[in-house]
Length: 165
Length: 193
Image (cartoon, rainbow over all chains, first blue to last red):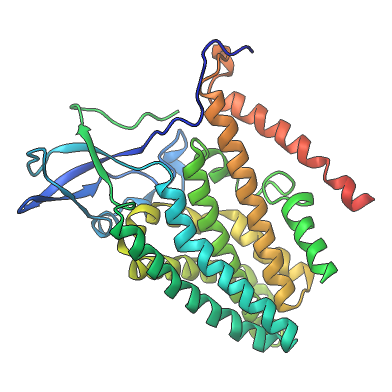
């Protein structure tokens, strides 16, 4: 099938999601993401075991976040928020790749040095702890640079929802 | 050293979790609409598979085998996987709340991902030592992430292509998945050779 358009696949598109304004605090607005299943929903959502786990109120409350209210948002309003392109990749590398690298590095060193399963196991858990500490430092740097903060994109239209393929 | 490298290549490419063992197909079709979500899911799964496999190996070696409790293996592993997911969620939330806001959505899906349990059960069959089991689990999950990202890249392009109406959506997705699986079958020649 021929491509009729000149498409730039590297175009920066933010990841978008819906959120509801739940409280105002000075110039800041607190938002809670709307209920979605972990995989964004699909035709099998009614029978998917993951659905219920990603939708309980406590999980959504835990993911409550703050944005600067420059747009006169009011409690109860639905808005579309987005995160910068590559933010998810940077966050994933910080949270998971750094601890995994230190874990495997510590394990490889211990195996080479001691050759015992128990020592390797203990070293790996120590490496994991060190990696998590390192991840915390990197995450703090990303936060200071504002690379992890969601941004307001627009107010959601009444009845607007995520498009599911 | 050489045996570990071969073990990892075998786990990641020759016996790929998704395309050779057909595990984790739910997330393979569900979370691959964008490359960045596929990367997020792949990394979270890699972390959980590696950590839970380490715990599974310990429980198998020090509890299930010595006391002949093999019949409890599946239930025990499911419990360990659920605990590992909860642990990961807790740690990410404590380490960085903004990271949790961004990544927390993928973690519940991993609990019901059969690839995690499948890799843990394969470790038992393989009778590996601890470092071998951990590297096998890590390489299996890298293979899973690799296929997720490749498929997400293909689907991003498919979304913009002119596809006959009857093939649009999941049908073309399954066709592309089957072609990817055929391509990965080429790696089986490495083990034969």
